[in-house]
Image: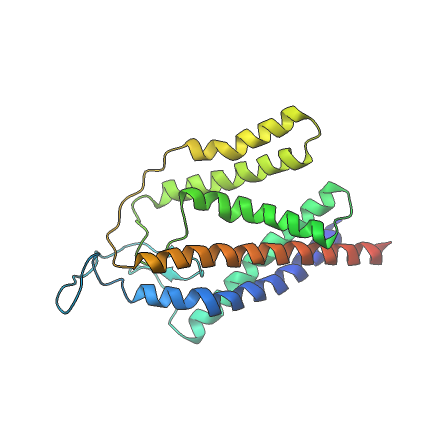
Length: 242
């Protein structure tokens, strides 16, 4: 069983990780660099002498491309070091998600086609990215408040767990009551009010909107590819063991 889980998750994770890394470099990273140019400006500042230094931050946060920002913690240098760290983090994350999907396929005890794998991948996207984005959309550098980071991460993790469990009950439950319970689990975290600290920033609203859409589209494509590849390699490993 370990081999049936490990090899499909590893191979699919490597390929999907390379895909999302390339997609980020082409589509998302340029937006991150553009947003970083506004980090030293206050919202509404225009023209020479109209800006002021942003408040110093003592913690780091990650943007949608997996880059860290913060004054008191180490961050990679621009160029090769930053690109290499981004590639490494994407591969590790993708392999982890691939292993989770591979384990889910094995535990389901049924052969999952690549088309069904795409659906499983979309379910992963909904749980890990889409559902949390309704309350906490992806943010560019300079937009996140450090004061409420614990509450935000707690809500996001709880939303992911509840959404994943709810989707499992909705699609795998054989009784109506289980499906109703699953729907309630999916909806539950969105009834919780998230207290967010307002951060003044000069990032244009158009750039913010483009970043949110691009991040969600790229991650959706990543999960679709990951699901299809994991199911494909799971089938190949199953045939080899037969």
